[in-house]
Length: 468
Ligand code: MN
Ligand code: MN
Image (tube, rainbow, N blue to C red; front, side, top):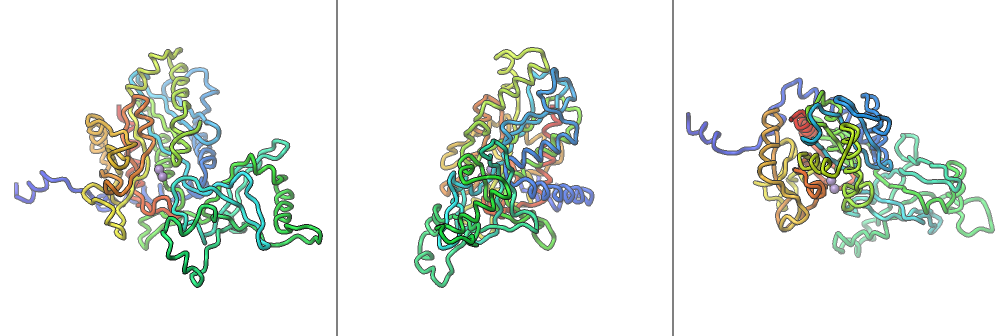
C-alpha cells in the first residue's frame, strides 16, 4: 500500500455526488427533479401539498385507511388530518410489534398570512394586511410578484378555494418598497428594522368605483369584485386561511441546470422525495410510513403539527386493523422498536457567507444526503441528539445501498441554529435521526438545492424503507 492509499484509507473525505453518478443515474435524477418542480408549482401551501400527495397516492393504489376494516401485508393506505397533514403507509410482512420505519417531513413553509381583517384603503389604493408565518427576512418579500392561495368560507358555509397569481393570465400582487432616492433613513437602519412587519401590506387594487357619495371607493370596488367572483363579503375574511406566497415558478438554476431554485423547498424537497420513496417501496418487511406535517415553522404545535396526537392515533388504528387489537402495551412496543428519519433541510455552506460556517462540520450543496446526529442551537438546545448506535445503523444502511451522504451542524456554534420535528418524534420514545437536503438561501422566496442531493435524499429513504 502506498502512503497515498494509506492516507485515503485512514481519512474521511466527503464526495461530490456529481462525480460519482453514472449517466443513467443522472437521467433518473433529472426526471425526478422535473417532476419535483411541478410538485412545487402545484403545492405552494400545506393544503395544496396534501391534495397533491393524495392524488399521487391514489394513482398508485393507496386507499383511505378508514375504508379498510383490516390491514394486511402489501396494503397501501393514507389518512388525512384536517387537510393539512397526511400519513401514508405500506404494510410490511413483519410483525408490526417489531416496529415501523418512519420518514417525517414538513409541508408548511415561511410565508405571509392574511390578518383576520386584512382589507383597507389608503391614498386611493387597496391593501391586504399580513402577519408573517415562520422565520423570514422581511426585506426579501418586498418588490417581488406574489400570489394569493387559501380557503375562505362564505356566510352560507360554502368553501371557496383561492388561487390567484399562478396562471400566466392571472394578475399578481406585491409589497411595495421605498425608492433608494428617498431611503436615507431606511438604509441606515439595522436590517431587522429596515422593513417592519406592519409594513408588509399587499397591494391589491387601485381603481375607484364610480359613485359619488362613498368614501373608500377602491376598497368598495375590491369588495364588489370579490363578491361577484367568489360570493364572499368582508366578514368572511375573519374565518379564512389565506396565504401570500411568491408567484414565480420553480426553475432550473445554472447553465448546467445543476440546481433547483424555488419557493418552499424547506421542506417540500424532503416531503416530495419521501412521497416518491414510499410510493416506490415494494414488499417491505417493516411497515413503511411517511408523515407530512404542518406547523413545523412555528414550533410543530397545533393539531396538524408533529406535536399533535394524530401520528400516534393513526399508528394505533393501523395496529388494531393489522392485529385485531391495540392495547397501550402493544402501541408502546411498536413505537419503541420503530425508527425514524426526521427529514428536514440543512444549511448548505454559502461561499458568500463562509464565515458563519465551521467548514469541517457543515453540509455542502452537491455532496449528498445530510445525516445529522443533532441540530439545535447554542449547546444543542432543541435537538434530539441521536444515540451513536442508531446513527451507526443508519449510516451503514446508506453505505450498503450506495447512498452518498455527508454530515454537519447548522453553522457555527454561537451563530444561531434551528430545531426540527426530530425532538418530538424522539419524545415518543422512538429512535430518530435528523437528515435532509442542504439548501442555499433557506427561508427566502427563492431557495436553492442541488439536484444531486435531491436524488440522494430519495435514494436514502428507499434504502431505509427497504431495510429490516
Ligand atoms: Mn424545515
Ligand atoms: Mn424552516
